[in-house]
Image (cartoon, rainbow, N blue to C red; front, top):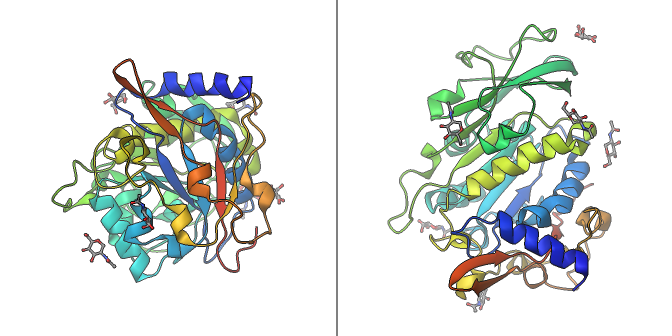
Length: 354
Ligand SMILES: *[C@@H]1O[C@H](CO)[C@@H](O)[C@H](O)[C@H]1NC(C)=O
Ligand SMILES: *[C@@H]1O[C@H](CO)[C@@H](O)[C@H](O)[C@H]1NC(C)=O
Ligand SMILES: *[C@@H]1O[C@H](CO)[C@@H](O)[C@H](O)[C@H]1NC(C)=O
Ligand SMILES: *[C@@H]1O[C@H](CO)[C@@H](O)[C@H](O)[C@H]1NC(C)=O
Ligand SMILES: *[C@@H]1O[C@H](CO)[C@@H](O)[C@H](O)[C@H]1NC(C)=O
Ligand SMILES: *[C@@H]1O[C@H](CO)[C@@H](O)[C@H](O)[C@H]1NC(C)=O
């Protein structure tokens, strides 16, 4: 183990919630069935680079066959990024609903609100569907809460070039607490709604969280609690993804959602990485050909992402579940999580073009 790996390990141990028992595992789903953001590879690369620092494990996929009860049960959370249109069939939607009803956590970024328009469970998880955005331009986003983790480290007034999303309904109707809004005088709203939708509410929602989303109802009998939900509409460009303030916004939102402790990485529940308690942490490996790229940790946090593996859809030469596994250890009576630095794995879907 390299010295830098040990340093990162110590950091992730410190950052871990007390209740955490093993490394939370998150399925990052970037499938598109319509518009495709060219920042998706950047998002994957960035997340692969910061995973170790946050003590989380990402499995990147565009393969909708991952969405089965069995495979999802190995994950603590799902993260949808810049998806479009119908990226899951009815079988996958049902499995995702079961995942939520089992305490599984949801996080959505940018066009995660622009998919699965017919799936009410998905609407309840994401909070609201995308309607339209004006031309990409500089706008000023305002935080409403300076203590919520995802906004604690962003400016009160955050001005940069980004798409300002408008929504088809008010996420507050789904129980969302809005943590970031946009100053509507800071940009030109030169586009119009695509339909006759209810109001998105005031102030104009940009990012929010849902403590107990309706998508988890009814909870399965032995599920401990609903998995939390976090959504941000920011994240259109490469520049946004490369901004460390934005990276912190997304990662802290995800970690807050996981930290609701509704899954096996936190010692409870029906789904998640149960490695520490001797459970079956297999997930991606059971999903067939997965190309695994386990990064070696480095202080600069660059290497190790799987996006470098783009284009290869070769059968796994190693099994991403085992290579990606964090090891949980009992430390002086307390349970601590020790992540194995940074991990990135890509599972390539058929016909996927990166
Ligand atoms: C964003 O980055 C990707 C590679 O990660 C590149 O293919 C794409 O052209 C970039 N987009 C812009 C607008 O520069
Ligand atoms: C998935 O799990 C749910 C809840 O246990 C169950 O009702 C459903 O039948 C399962 N689906 C499949 C395809 O096995
Ligand atoms: C702000 O965030 C803190 C920390 O998560 C939370 O306890 C509080 O309820 C939030 N306040 C509002 C108004 O959302
Ligand atoms: C919308 O406004 C922006 C900023 O003023 C401008 O750059 C863009 O060309 C406008 N687009 C349309 C379609 O009017
Ligand atoms: C990220 O955004 C913040 C807030 O706008 C800005 O202060 C900072 O300079 C940006 N960082 C980079 C690396 O672009
Ligand atoms: C873990 O799950 C996989 C896939 O369902 C299964 O093949 C394997 O036997 C399980 N291992 C254990 C130790 O339960």
